[in-house]
Length: 312
Image 1 (tube, rainbow, N blue to C red):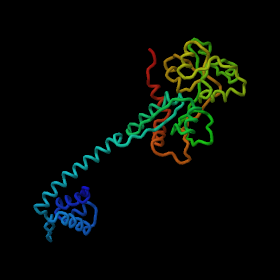
Image 2: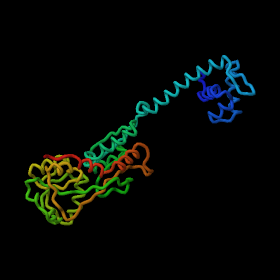
Image 3: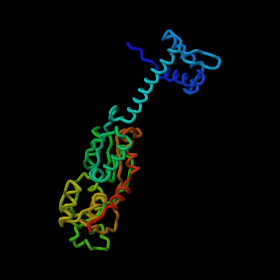
Image 4: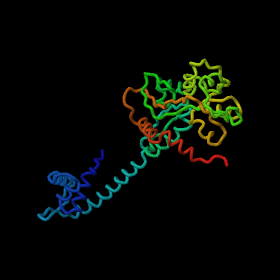
C-alpha cells in the first residue's frame, strides 16, 4: 500500500524554510520546538538525506530541502483547494433528505418561504414535502413515514412531541355580492352556527377548529364539504355559501377584493405547531427547518402579502 505523507509535517517543513528556523516554523504551526525538531529528523530519516543545515543563527534548507519544500507547497495548495471545494459543495458529498408532512394551509402559504430560507443556509438539505390534512400528518409521524409534521389543529395528541411555531386565526369570508359583504356589526357565533357554510373535510385543522367553536350551538349541516382551501375559495367567490378559512389562506383574495371578510364577535385563533415522534430534543435537518420557520415567521409572510398591489 502507498504510504501517504502527513500534510501537517509538510506544512511544518514549509513554515521552517519560510521562517528560517525550526523555532520560527514551530511557532507558526503552533507546536513546541522539540516536537518540530523530531518531525524534521523523521522526514530526513525517511529520505535518507538531510533537509536542513542547522546553525546557531537558524536553519537553511539543503538543495534537497529546497526541492522538498517546493513539492510540499504544491501538495498543500492542492489540499487547500480540495478543502475549499468540499466546504462550498456539501450537497455533492452528503445530501440530506428531510421528510416533512404539512397541513394544507401551512404548506400553501408558509412552508415554501421556510424551505427557501433553509436552503439558502444549508443547500445540502432537501425537503421532501407531502401536503396532507392535519389528521394524516399525525398518522405519518406515528408510523415513521414522516420525520417532521407542521399542523394547525387546535389539540395535539400527548404521545407526540410538539413546539408552537406561530399563530393563525380563522376568518369568515363571503363573495362581494353576498348580503353580508356590507355588514358592519359582528356576527354572533350562534348566527354562524345557524348558517350553512362551505367547509373543509373532516380531519383538516381548519375544520377541527371551526367545529370546536360551533359545536356548543348545534350547528346546521354544511352547504358543501371540499378538500382544499382553493376549492373553498372558488366556491365562495362564485357566490356560494360563506366559509370560515385561515386568514393565511384567504389573505391575497381579501387584498384583491375577490372575497370580503365579515366581522365575527369571537376571534377563532389556532396555533401552528411542529410535531415529531422522538422523545429527544429535535436535532439535525428538522431542527434547522424549525429555526428557519421561527426566524421567518408568519408576520413576515403577511407583510409580503400587504406589499402586493391590488386591482386599480
